[in-house]
Image 1 (tube, rainbow, N blue to C red):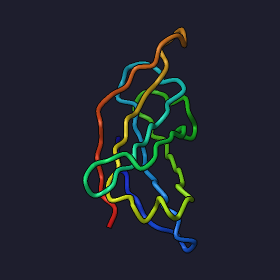
Image 2 (cartoon, one colour):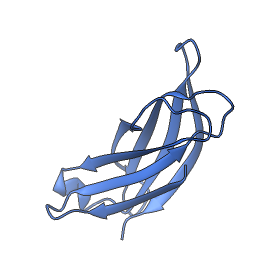
Image 3 (cartoon, helix red, strand yellow):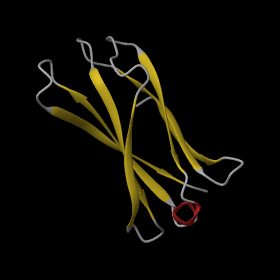
Image 4 (tube, helix red, strand yellow):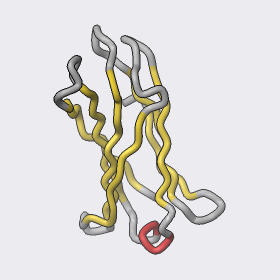
Length: 106
């Protein structure tokens, strides 16, 4: 994960944008970002996922991602989020998840 941030857009929706980098010696395939939105006490508000664009990333290359939480009732509850980056194995039969990244919503 190179960067990530959450911001509200003009509609009051929560946009989560960022960039991932492939630090592996082989191509990362089907790179997916899993998002967990939490309230002030850490309870689950919502979850979802999005793909990096492009979803297949060559070694040392970067790819952006973006996702939007449009349910404004949930957006008002969200105070923090967690991101997990996953990718498929070479034969596409397993998903490998890497570190957890955390952020806050102002």
